[in-house]
Length: 128
Image (cartoon, rainbow, N blue to C red; front, side):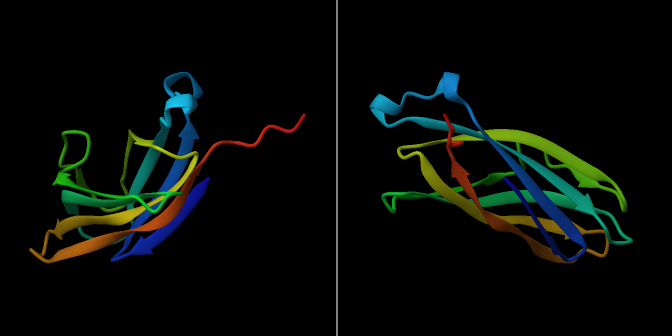
């Protein structure tokens, strides 16, 4: 899975991985990793202040996750630079979606939301 979106000169792309060894399908636990790449394509720096995720599983159960920064960091991204991190989430179903936004501020003291495009979390299908 690879999704990409550009907003306010901030380009966000996401790669997902299903972690079979951490998952427990019999108890409705499906563990997914997602790696986010945030590229500043603008000409001024910007700092990521907080995040808001909306995570939905195939049963329609929605988790709203809000918090400061990402993985304990509030990265400052210079023009032309990329910041990448990996985090994880657990779903009760083998299929789900995530979307959201990063709340950011640029060097001109303008606050803006960088939109995270909706992406799919799913178990890779095995072909025998």
